[in-house]
Image 1 (tube, helix red, strand yellow):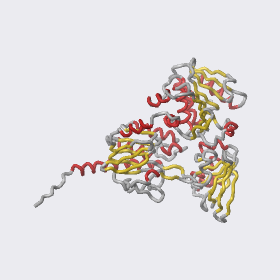
Image 2 (cartoon, rainbow, N blue to C red; image 1 turned 120 degrees about the vertical axis):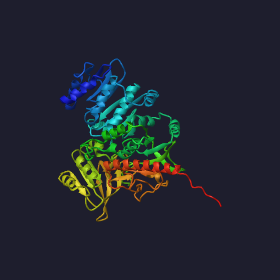
Image 3 (cartoon, one colour; image 1 turned 180 degrees about the vertical axis):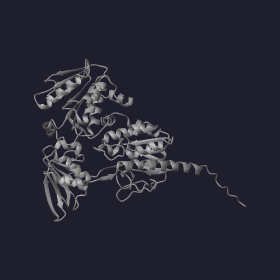
Image 4 (spheres, rainbow, N blue to C red; image 1 turned 135 degrees about the horizontal axis):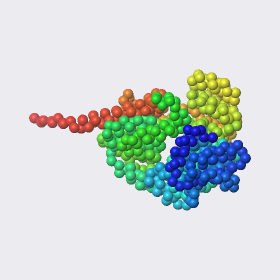
Amino acid sequence: MLDANLKTQLQAYLEKLVYPIELIASLDSTPKSAELRTLLQEIAGLSDKVTFIENSTADARKPSFTIARVDSDVRVSFAGLPMGHEFTSLVLALLQVGGHPVKLDDAVVEQIRNLPGDYVFETYFSLSCQNCPDVVQALNAMSIINPRIKHISIDGALFQDEVDARQVMAVPSVFLNGENFHSGRASAEELLAKLGAGNTEARAEALDAKDEFDVLVVGGGPAGAAAAIYAARKGIRTGVVAERFGGQVLDTMSIENYISVIETEGPKFATALEQHVKTYDVDVMNLHRAAGIRRVGKQVQVDIDGGGTLKAKTVVLATGARWRELNVPGEQEYRNRGVAYCPHCDGPLFKGKDVAVVGGGNSGVEAAIDLAGLVKSVTLLEFGAELRADEVLQRKLRSLPNVTILTMAQTTEVLGDGQKVTGLIYKDRSTHESKQLQLDGIFVQIGLVPNTEWLKESEVTLSRFGEIEVDVRGATSLAGVFAAGDVTTVPFKQIIIAAGEGAKAALSAFDYMIRASVEEDQPQEETVTV
């Protein structure tokens, strides 16, 4: 099941095991169980500290297995085969259960150890989901640090009856003690915050106590990362405050147009961004959302949601953009219950079902093509008279037998039965007739909206589309404040353009700061009274 190269790499990793571990499998006679048996036996054969045990009564879910530290209650469980994006989760679980240190900040580890009570987490994932490993790995780490926390990761595609019964229509989807707890990407810090761990007041005080930055970057995507690196290389005090480092790149499946990087995946690229920034003396403040900005004398101050204010001589705004929503009745009610925004993540949950894709640009057509290989049928709805995607994508789409294309179609309402999506209503813009489609899922792919709501009461000028207006140097209307990336009026929302604009904004901020300091040092002309 594992090729020779992968076995060699895994064998080298398993040499880091401190404690012996057992792979306890619960299997039946299905082909997937046979595959899992082969995988676990191959892993056990790579190290004398790993033992394979088959116990059909160990877990009701089949195929499933538990990685257990011998003579300990430290363990992690998987239901299904953690391959694809989850193979890294499997390798980390093997190492961490075997005693290899969990890589989390000491303060986070202490919070996990001090969690009161018992917690049973169940995480549903899909093998094509690039967001799922973060949640799986975070909860696995938490269960290793605190044995009162139990966690099992479940491949939703293999346990469809369970997924249907629990109305799981988006991954990652986390249940805590049998109740729906969380949906979407999350780090250990975010999950702890959701559990009520941590001291909000202390976090605000810590931000207030920070010294003034020379350059403060708001946002941790490609533009923000580039700005931080270029500022730090000048030897000046640099900080990054971000809601989640990596930004929208974390939700990107494949990157094939970043020069010199032939192909990579969004989460890997985001991790590389953060690692690159942290090679410099940059104060990275993650899991903080900016709430306001103002100029106070010669200083720019950024207020943080939840309390605390950061101070800087200059600021680079790089808060990026997010998927645009339909803004029609029913969309929010059925979000993650049939209304989805990531076809790569959630597509496998709709296997054999009827779905729609709203949006005829490149992202919409690509989504329809990907989904067509999984679902029963795809209906693509485009507002305009023609699809806007590249011709090569349109040709591929039209060649698929289970795809229907509707142009001049305006989605007006999402329908559901109170639990999940059952269809949508659209208006035929040619005839003004209202029509209805029966569906199990709706994937929204209609472009981006800038993350600038927090700036609407500020002195930063926004365009009619909500983007930050910038000049050729990346300067905004507020002195000392610059902006870069998808949040600005700069055309073409591409990673490489965002990174370049981030670098330019940082250099502009540095130039502004130097010029301002020179002006302050200039002697003032004396006024002579005769």
